[in-house]
Length: 356
Image (cartoon, rainbow, N blue to C red; front, side):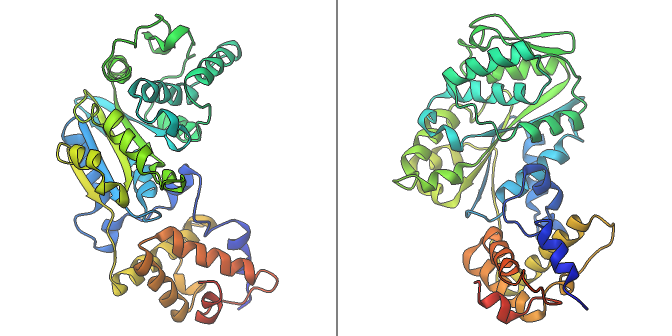
């Protein structure tokens, strides 16, 4: 056996720890398939379907919160509540720490995220960008994924028109921005108004907040930003007329504002940690899944095609010790980089220990 398979997987970035959101959703291994009960994916879908309000996904950095969120977002587009299709909307907050405590800014960011995913004429696009530049950062990394979610959910096409102050109306099946100042009196930063308007299109809004982990890289470890966000944005959103899902790093759970909203949330879903035997089972399934997803040949591949038992033991120990799937995949990717001049048939324990 040659190292051809490893070379192909490396070239295609099969084990990159951080994937684009649509690839992260496609590569996700539902934990229920691994015998983990209750399955976090099912818990999240049930929480959103149960009632409006806030659902928390809590886990260590790299534990799989974003993977769980993106996978479930795609599943939600296939479901309905009271005859309305779900419209999940991922709202990135990592680049917006300066306005983290401002609900109106968050509402405008969410609306800008939705509009960025819809067809917009050139003139209106220019106006929209000028408006968002004054209110929120124009970095909207979720826009491509949000567009995919809208299409999966059958959201009608149309032109989103930009007008002053992010007022929003609907004309038939076209979402349009108009009515200057219409959102300024909405106690939920415009989101309640937006949710009502989307219901005219028989769509149920689900706000999904990601990237709060990135605040941990701020000088104070992100505690001030996270506290401000939970108190200023999420506390008012605990019981709105729509669903809100937030991925939160475990370290935020010690904050007073987090404790206050956790008590009133619809659900708190903890991404599981693993004992060594279960960690080995999980990482084996993830590696096999990444191989199958990358090759796209509709064959159920095995982790043993790329790793020997000793190498799997190293990755399992890494997952158990760090609680981070991302960390384990980083070791695998870094190992492939080191051997890329001459790929072996499979990676061994010794190969991985040099990178771990």
